[in-house]
Length: 291
Image (cartoon, rainbow, N blue to C red; front, top):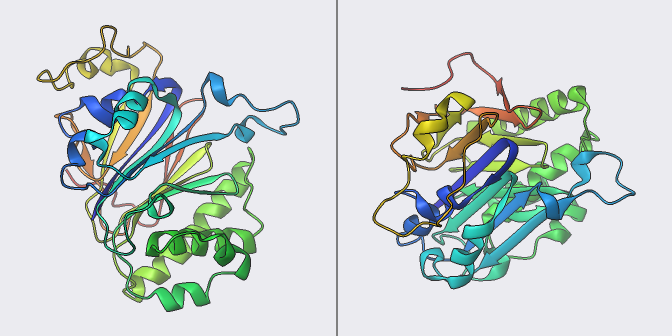
């Protein structure tokens, strides 16, 4: 069991709310999931693409990890106070496969992609057999999660989709490739695998075997967002503002606030495209979200 959260926003957004200020923030959830934490942020002033970059999607991820419980780690709490960007993937771990170590801490990063997983896979041998030697050589830890990441990257490699750039056709094809791969894993009862997979321009969201919820915040939510903080703990003197232009989609293992989160149905695969305003692209059946 782990807990994960993802944010895709139309403009640079501070992530303190989901990381430490919300009633069910990752800092609070780390009491039950104490075996390490990781935060990956994309976008923002310190991730401007280098002059040689071919597109804005070349901006780099900023990834920080620790092995202490997030809510008891000064580095996590300090980072949560200043972390900002347009895309966030964050995770607190309750270990099932592999010991507590930085190598086993999510999210994992390869080839410009970031990946976080919640669940346990039971058929590691089959996953490894279907993963390329190149991707297996990149696995540094002991987790089933990192092998699943390598497996998914192998599928994208085979389709020539490791780098999607700004091509809408490539993103649609990547969605199809991931949908086929996840459907096969579900059909053979490979285990529980909720995950977030992002290249910084899109975030692929999958639910199977664990809870997963979605919240969409639009510019109309300006007043409500400031009411979602946990008033029992101190917050910064100038909490992050929700501007009149901001639109964001949040995904989390459980409802972090009292807002109207929607539970995603089992077997959901969803792609969230970031800009210029987050767009939800559903894969599979038209039956989308439970109330």
